[in-house]
Amino acid sequence: MLSFPKDFIWGVAASAYQIEGAWNEDGRGTSIWDTFSHIPGKVLNNENGDVAADHYHRWKEDVALMSELGVKAYRFSTAWPRILPEGVERVNPKGLDFYDRLVDELLRRGIEPYICLFHWDLPQPLQDQGGWTNRETASHFAEYARVTAERLGDRVKTWFTHNEPWVAAFVGHLFGEHAPGQKDLGAAIKAMHHLLLSHGLAAEAIRAAVKGPVQIGITLNLNPVHPATNSKKDREAAERVDLFMNRIVLDPLLKGTTPIQDSALTKILTARLIQDGDLQKIRQLDLLGVNYYSRTVMKHSNSLPVVNAEQVHPVGNEYSGMWEIYPEGMHETLKMVWEYHPTCELMVTENGIPVPDGVDFDGRVRDERRIRYLRDHIAQVHRAIEDGIPVKGYFHWSLLDNFEWALGYGQRFGLVHVDWKTQKRITKDSGRWFAKVIQENGLDISR
Image (cartoon, rainbow, N blue to C red; front, side, top):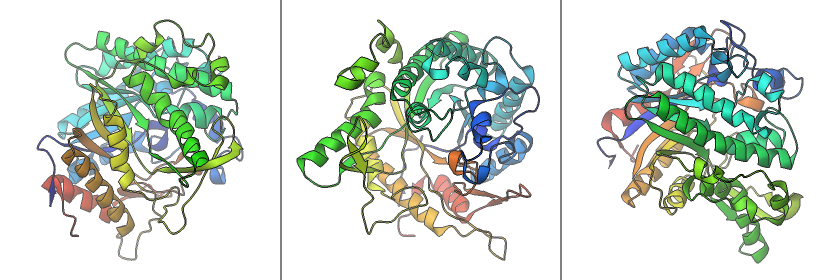
C-alpha cells in the first residue's frame, strides 16, 4: 500500500462549457466556443456544447455523486459570459446565483470548492474587439475576477485564474483547432503574454476583493519533451519544443523572465508587447496546478515552423484515443517544476484518460483500462512525494463524461458515465475504485 500524507487532497475537476449546457439560458452571453462549435466542420460530427452534460440543471445530482465518491475538493470553472454577458460592465445576477448555489451545496456536503475563472470560454463581444490579442482583455479579466470574488470569496478560498493558457493561446491562435480558430504566430504570442498578464491583474483583484486568507493559482498543461533519438539535431529540436511548451509559461510565473525574448523570430513579434513591470506583475503565485496526460517525443523536421520539429509516436507503446500512455512522465513533470525551486504550493490539477466506455448488459461500466492508467499515474505522484516534492493533491479529470472540445462527445474521460440521449449518470468501475483510494488515502498497487 502506498500511503499519502494525511492532509492530501483528493478531488475531481470539470469546466463550464464542457458540462453546463444551458448556453442561452438565464441571461448567459455568447462565448467564442458557442460561435466556433456552430461553424460546420470545426468540431467532430458538428457537435457542440449547447446541452453537454446538462450540469446547469443537474448540478445537485452531480454534487451528490461527488459526495458518494468521497471526493474532498471540486475544481470547476465559472463561465465568464454567464456572469458578464458582454464580458464587461453589466453583471448577470442569475449567473452569479447559479455558482452561489453550487458553492453552498458543495460546502454542505463537505467538498471544498476550487474555482477556475477561465477555461477557454471568452465572451464573444470581447473576441470581436481582438480577444486575447488585445491587451485591454487582461484588464477586463481582472474586473470579471473582482466581480466573481466579491460574490463567492467569503466561502471560496482557492482560486485558479486560468486553465492551460498555452492551449488557449497556441491551439486557439496558431494551430486553429480551438476557438477562436486563428492560424497566426504573432496572434498566439500576443495572446500568450496577455493571458499571463491577466493572471497577475486578476490575482491582485481577487486579493483586494476577498477578506481573509486566499490562495491564487494557475493550472498549466506540462509534459516532458524527449528527443526521438540521441542525435544532436533531435536533442536540439526537443529543447526548442520544451521552450515553446513548458518554459514559455513556467519562466514568467516562477522566475519573472520569458524565453520568447531570446528567440530571433519571436523577438520581432514581441517588440513593444512586453511592457515595463509586466513580468513582475505576472509572477504572483501561491499555488501551481500541473495538468499531466502524456509526454512529447520530437525529431528534427521543417514541418512545424519556429521549433523546426515534428512529433513522433514511438512504435510498440500503449496509446489512448488521444495520446501515448506514459506514467513516468508524471514524475518527470513534477520534478521539472520542482527544479525551478518554486515558493508556491504544487498539486496535480488534471490527469485522466479517454476510454471508449460502454454500459454492459447489467448496467455496469467496466473501464479497467482507466483504472490501470490511474493506478500507474497516482503511483508516480507518490514517487514524487517520496523524492521530496511536496505535492498537495490530485484531481482527476474528470467527474463526468463531457464535451471534449474539437473532438466532440467521442472521447469519454469521466468517472461517471453520461448517456447523451437521456443524461442518465452511471458511476463507472473506475469511480468506485477511486472512491476506495480516497477512503484509504492510499494506493494498493497489487490490484
